[in-house]
Image (cartoon, rainbow, N blue to C red; front, side):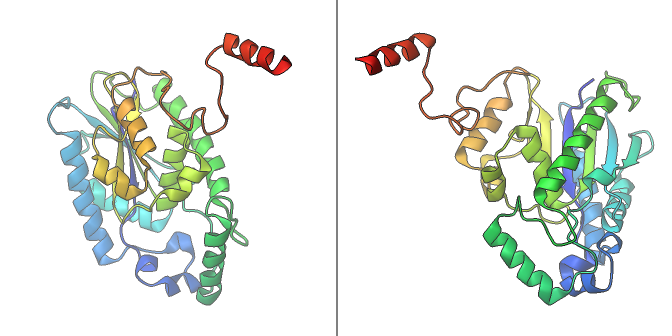
Length: 280
């Protein structure tokens, strides 16, 4: 019942990406795509279709979409959809929990510049925008979305035939997609702070590996992951996941234990030995 791929995709170029003054008069959720953004979305749709129907895929593959309610993500999905037939698309759902981080209401350009400079000093994850959200707030709602997504999968609410490859595509925003990856792969706040944003209509492919774990390393190169801001340790973990058995514990993953503890003993006997040495 597990999807073969979970794909995170950022929207195409928007009016706000082109000119930040658009946010002073237009609500963030109403910002539209530019003509370039629409072309990017059509091109990304062709890339997605090629990926899903490529070598080694079942001929009767299917795709299910989740989409942020913002105008630019809805428009991106509309253009992506031009590359798919009704036979392939088994459903779509607008999902408000994968919307953009809330930066406040109308955004005065000069004030927002100062605020974002403050965020850089404070830290992107914990800084909360006045009248808006922090990345930590986004983490909480993405975590809630996780629970719903897994219920959809395990209860087969997507009405999917398990003999066909299923692809879940989440059309969302840059920070939300990075938070999704952070939550999925249990990355720390420090690791999140290192991540670079996705480009417009860029996507990250989490594919089910041979042992049942999802990994970025199945479809993406080490060079790509380095460019995204993943550390060598994070990349090594992705490579391990590509062949690991589902639910396995990666003993070589430094942030699973070593990030939180100093010099954990290898066994109970080692602890007793150290205590005995301390008593003499």
